[in-house]
Image (cartoon, rainbow over all chains, first blue to last red):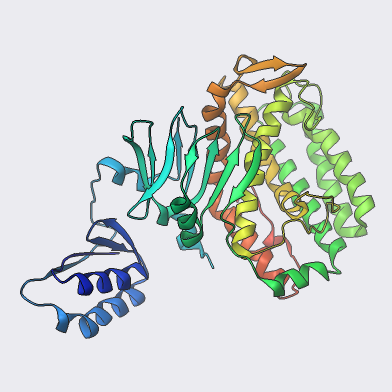
Amino acid sequence: MIIVSYDISDNKKRSRFAKYLSRFGHRIQYSVFEIDHSSRILNNIKQDIENRFKKTFGQEDSVYILELSTACKITKYGNAENKDKDLIILG
Amino acid sequence: MLEKPDFMKKQVLFLFPSQGDKLSFKNDNAVISDKEGLIKYQVTCYRLFALYIVGDMTITTGIVRRAQKFGFVICLMTPGLKLYSTIGNRMEGNTHLHRKQYSCNKSDELSQWIVANKIVNQKTALQTIRKKTDSCIEAISKLGEYTEKIKRDLPDTESLLGIEGSASRIYFPCIMDGIDWKGRKPRIKAVWVNSLMDIGYSVLFNFIDSLLQVYGFDTYCGVYHREFYMRKSLVCDLMEPIRPVIDMRIRKAINLKEISDEDFKVYNHQWQLDYKKSPKSAGIFMEAILEKKEDIFLYIQRYYRNFMKDREMEDENMFLINK
């Protein structure tokens, strides 16, 4: 799994990047995407970001790609806790 | 099309809304808010498989659009957990599959496979009973004979109905042994246990229906259950082998006193589940189904793939409750 967190100043660049990421993963916060795929596809995505988007990022932008393994510990609070349940009953 | 790793991450959400509750979306999250607009709950649409709304609430066109986009179904149910509508069918237009369904000439073989699978699971369900009575031991043996008979004689649909009926007649008294139960009478809620079974099978029915919609099946076109106007015969067919999961869960729930007749009320000689107890019942059944989530998904997936490729349905394609 990879987490892509970005802070991009240009609106057009930011939405283009978000649209690209939403093809493979989903938004977990405003500018944070979670992409959970096989290592082959994740490597393709990282390479694609390197080839297509890296050159467009400037000093006013900040992008993090965090690679998580099963050994990584993730602590969740708020509605983030809801993601791990198979069944949710409300009422 | 949905693959197993994605399906295993999917969630089911049961909503029992209060007065004034609203279902909308925000940043691709499904948001449930109260009448003051305060967010009660939020969950990402990406992970949703099915959203069951039991009772009345306001929903927005935005969430309906997201149901289509993210491929989850919104099931609308009465307070008695009876489904009356669904929004957001998944795959429409799988015309190749529909043509194969309408021209299918293997109904007898498929029906034999379905009924044999059901009886295998009924036998397994009885084998899980710790203290078996003599009639239970005899029933287990008899059910084994019925599956052999199906494989040996390859009966037509009419004969299969007889075998299925005979199997059920010896199965139900054993699985419901020790419980206040006087016989399986579907939809006639003269006894609370029958009403409970109807609810359990209904929850299972909706889940299987949602899964079949992933592949684009015409769920009204079955192979074993006869086609009736507005009856989803294919769902009835493919849920048959999974029914013992519900039966076992009912037995356990009653023995552990998780559910009793006190959770029901009698209206017009019919036992109806008290609305306040609906979340507990729905949760009990859906948890039992989701425990077998992976096996159920693979069972439907293998059915789809073998059906499309005109392959025989073998024993290894069956859904087994003790796998």
